[in-house]
Image 1 (cartoon, helix red, strand yellow):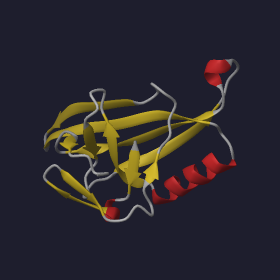
Image 2 (cartoon, rainbow, N blue to C red):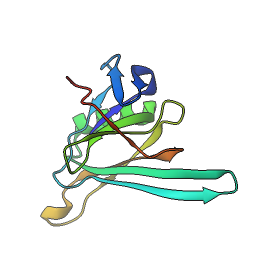
Image 3 (cartoon, rainbow, N blue to C red):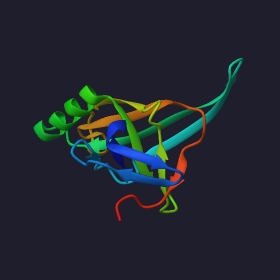
Image 4 (tube, rainbow, N blue to C red):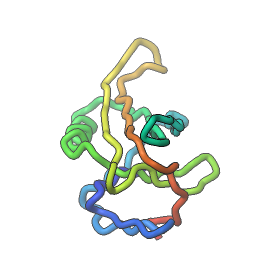
Length: 136
């Protein structure tokens, strides 16, 4: 999963061009910990999709805390991720990027070792789009 501020990329159809990777965050996550949901919500103003990407980032340590603090300052991102079929998708839009949040947690036992539960959430008018590999 890669989080990119809206000013650091352009989108043209299904092509995403990364203008700068200075603020791009390559997120290392615990295997099989990521999830994506996209729920259609209807209101008097029309339809929107509630989008949420979440993952578990292992290790509550000084380096992880520094990265989380930086992401909390920027707060708004577009997120590139790979789905279960290996296809690249883009969630969020330049007009309405997703909001980042993180929660540090720990518990007893191996499954609950210290980590951050991170989330990118927001609303958009269309579903997350399939994109070409932006890293080639």
